[in-house]
Image (cartoon, rainbow, N blue to C red):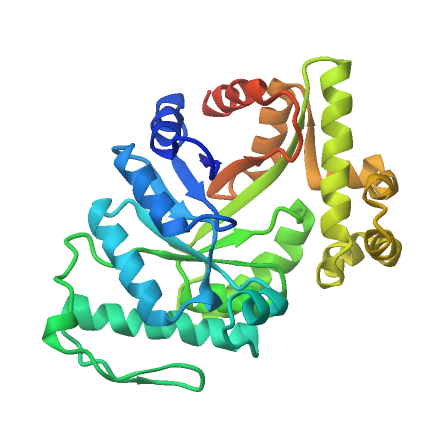
Length: 335
């Protein structure tokens, strides 16, 4: 199980990437919030030599298959094969109102987008004539002037983020890896996520999950004393409550018999009751979503839950707590 970290969008990202590599992380992820994830990935590549660098995630529907293909192909070239293109769909309001791009049938659209992108790469890498015509995307023109030279290491792997069964199955069918949402549990991964991925793998003619990469930003609630632990528990419960207030994520709660809390959390969120929402998250729920304890206990718990299930793990710590304890968790995991 490889251990990754997410890079902040602020500050000297090249220096941060270099420091993360020196700290012993195996991979570095950049997200898309208020800066371009591909420019951030290039900065991370420039600051490192041998770690994986990828987007987690870039917003797929904000772009076309051609624009995604070109950015990712360049990064595969500049990184000597260390780049991973991680994609996610975002939600309808952001795609239509923030990006002014079309939204419809997200799972079938994502499937077609990735297949279109692979068709473009096949043209650039292997000289296959470009003739992709689908329901949502059409790419039938590629002249020599606009054709990049082949990349020595080939096109980058594509990882896809998802929660629901349909998007998860698409990941299994057409992607090389899957980002589990942080709002998940070991039981949900085993009973819902993995079967959906296997269904997709079968549809794509692949052998089970062989060669497929499972990634998880795992909640960690870590503290070395009572004060740090109290801060960690409060912060983690608030973030779990934030995700749980989203109706689309109710399936995770329903699996555990906690679905009835979701409408109340939604009501509080609409009323601005953000500070009260965490109070509805019980210790039982906290323990299901997060590994809780001292640095050594957290490392042991992560290994116990996810070894053999998750291929790439990162720490999700949504609170201003004992961040200087994470190197201890990393060291214990590596040991």
